[in-house]
Image 1: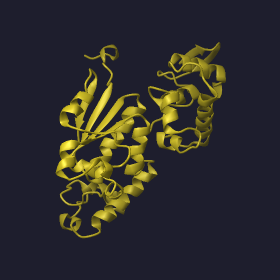
Image 2: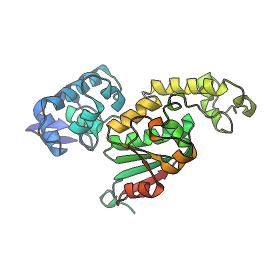
Image 3: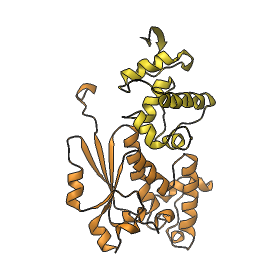
Image 4: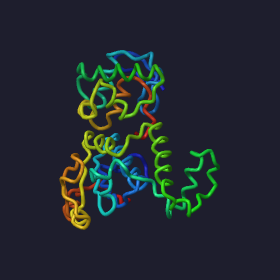
Length: 103
Length: 175
């Protein structure tokens, strides 16, 4: 379905995840972050978001364990940056699909 | 009929771990970590043989139970055999068989990015999950807090564990 966010019309699924990662930009990220109650995105948030997009583009399976080992962010920091579901929320903000793994 | 609007979200999972084999421990660790990933609070309470997963001397060497495990046929595909093939009970008692089954299982879990027990406990602890040991079981197995891995938050009585689990939306799960 279509959704207008940050002045741009984008394609999202019923949970609000972008279905086309190429439609993403930083203004959209900021608007989704506000909707998710994350607040203003800092450099630390954006580092995670960019890393997620890079990994997604490579087709890597994203897990909470691999994030903690990435060197980009520690597990603790990830939970602090994106409270209430770190991998799900950061993926949504990054404009990539909802992670499907259990780890 | 329940509709999405009247569904009360799970707020907290309090998981009691009473078994100490690899296959007895992992489901609890996965459920606790999965809860934290969903923004749900998680506590693990290790009691009886579950303490095997917290004792520094044992936790890196947990084994799959190959004796009295009638569902071990599930692991047969790891040997290239059909899932319907029963695992002969007598084989489970042969020295080294449990270690071999454990090796196979660990290899498969690593492929799925499931961490070893110590790293998994650290991950859960870093994610804000709480790790508790049962006082009565500690006394029974003659264990002290310093015998346990450093991420253990506290040694609790049963009553303290229930107090810790208080609140609407908490689910207590026994494994």
